[in-house]
Image 1 (cartoon, each protein chain N blue to C red):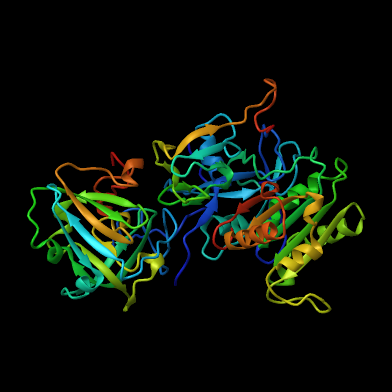
Image 2: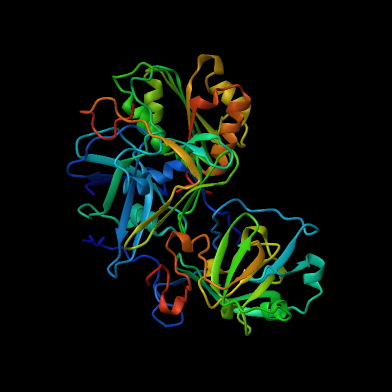
Amino acid sequence: MNEQAAVYDGNSLAGPLSEVFAVELTTAAGRCRSCGTTSQVATFRVYGPGPGFVGRCPHCEDVLLRLVRTPEALWLDFSGVSALRIPMPTDPAAETGQIS
Amino acid sequence: MVERRRETETASTLVLEVPGWPGHLAGQHVDVRLTAPDGYQAARSYSLAAPTNGDRIEITVQRVPDGEVSSYLADEARNGDTVEVRGPVGGWFVWKPEDSAPVLLVAGGSGVVPLMAMIRSRDGVSAAPFRLIHSVRTPQDRIYDHELRSRATQGGGLDITFVYTRTAPAGETRSVGRITADDLIRYGWLPDLAPTCYVCGPTPFVETVADLLIDLGHNPTRIRTERFGPTGP
Amino acid sequence: MDIFTRGFRGRGRDSSGQLPPGQYLTNDFPVLSAGPTPRIPLDAWAFTITTELAESQQWSWAELMALPAESITANIHCVTRWSKLDTDWRGVSLDTLLADIETEADFALVNSYGGYSTNLPLEDLLDGKAWVAFEYEGEELAPEHGGPARLLVPHLYLWKSAKWVRGIDLMLQDSPGFWEQLGYHDYGDPWREQRYQGD
């Protein structure tokens, strides 16, 4: 039986990234080191979750990030992103989960 | 788990009580993890189906053929059972009542779940007009059918249209087939109204619809997508 | 602290000993990928082996097809836990491809169209353990399964059987490939359950 590889988007990285980062990352914008296009993490073309997640540039398909969860560790390679702009809550008293 | 509601032959809503739940935005999801006696773990993401309600959250699970997590949740889990939940997560595919723009919701199959959370969270807090186009194979696949029809007839600014891809009910005027640009024009919002569009469902569906919306002139930055994988959860 | 989920078993676990630890049997052939499926026209396809001295030998598709090919029946084991028994392939043995290559290298870094790579010891490509496979179950290898040709090294986890194989670099030192850089095992023996670094 022929199936297709699972292609998702960066929304599916929200949970795994929340294990590492205290702030919401899917609304962050990352610049592709390869083609220079800036895209929101939620729009990355995501392959996986097995053997790991691979997030690719929606413009040129180059690898932006890779994430593997082993029993003892989380491996993260963000080197395909040359710069990341993470929106931060302007109100220090804002709850986590509030996105400005 | 505190309650189960069967939605269709293959989909059920599970109500989970999560002590200390911080509240969430419509469109967010949770990751559910199950652990077998030998330590083996499996996890899947499920969209929250309802708005914040104290410690209670709702997820609607579609049973996937050969799906080890979905068949447990859809068929086996009983009231009193405990599962691990991580969330809420996802801050991009969300709708907030402060957004006053018209909203176009386009769902493929179980992609309707996060869009239902948006519809339910609108009650009494927003007058933004909503239009939902739900693509399903057959009338039996309409999740939330009763509630959606009831909401639409209340005249609260919600319009719903079902698009059938395999079998339509008797009397249906639109011919059976996949969603087209024409459907998006006829049952959606025109681009000059600057609606926010949310598209959710299997990956091929989402990509087709997003491309159609862009071709129709919708602003790509006003289109938010969530892909559920090759065939959806 | 793990919370056991009442009534959850996971996929049927094998108790017959026929499968490596932690694997389950599947009748499907799941498709996993790190990226979009490359489409390589056969007239552009080439397979290159490069030694540690940067000497290389290359085969076009026609040249590969002219080499003696073998039929292989193998059990395959994916690190995501599914196993498939008695899969049938046709391919050219790495023994044939490496026959005239002089090298002191102990390691190999396999690279693929689309950018994927994986590393393994050179000796695990020799003595009837590895092939460049181009047919599966009697048909041309489908693109989503690695066609036109993939590496097949069934005694190791299937991530070592690089799809869309394009070449092998022979190296004096081991160099981690795509998944090995992110925590997967440099060797990957399913019978010793070597999934991750340190296993």
